[in-house]
Image (cartoon, rainbow, N blue to C red; front, side, top):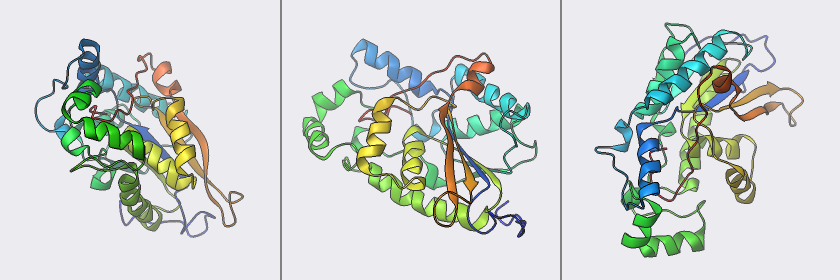
Length: 265
C-alpha cells in the first residue's frame, strides 16, 4: 500500500498518518528462555540460532489474537490500513495472528521494514547480566559510564543508533501514508525510540519513561493527528503501553525488561 491514495480534503493529508498504533510483539520463546536463564543464574540464554528467527511463544500468539479481536470489535475506532512490521519472526507472527483474528482486513499486506528490527547487541547478544559481568566486564563499565542511551557494544547499536534509522522510517511513513491509519509491530526499544522522535523528547525523559516500566507484550501506543498539536498540527499521544486489549481478551499480560544483552525482546 506504499502508493495508497490520500484524500486531499482531509486536514492531515500530506503530513502524518491520521492514526498511528505502535505495538510490541507478543511474548516470544526468547522472553521465556531469558526468564529461565536469569532465574538459574546462567551466563547465556538457551536459544539456538539467530535472534531474528526466534518465534512467539504459545502465550504470545494468544496475546496477538486478543489484540486482533479487540480491534475487530471496534474498540480501537478503526482498523489499520497499513501494516508495517519488523522483519524479526516474532514481530511477523504477531502481525499475522493479529490479522487472522480480524484486526485488519484479511488481505492487508504486512510490509516488512528492516529499520524496525530489534536493537543489535553485537558481542553481548544472548548473554545474561551475569554473563556480561563474567565475560565482558569492560562493557559493563562502559555502559555504567556512558549510560544505556549512548553505549554501543562492539558490533552492536546504541539507542541513538536505533533512533537514527527510525528517523528515516518516520520520513517514509510521512511521505507515503499521510492521512491513513497505520500500525507498526516491533520491539520494546523501537517503541521507546519512536516516542523519543515523535514527541521530541530528550535522553533524560525517555530513560525516565523506560525506568517507570517495561513495554508490555502486545501493549498498544497510539497517536492521532491533531491540528491543535504544535504550530502546524502533529501526532498527539492518546495512550501508551495500553494492555486492556490483551486483558479483555483474557490473555495474561507479560513484559520483559530491556537488559544490556539481547534478551530476545
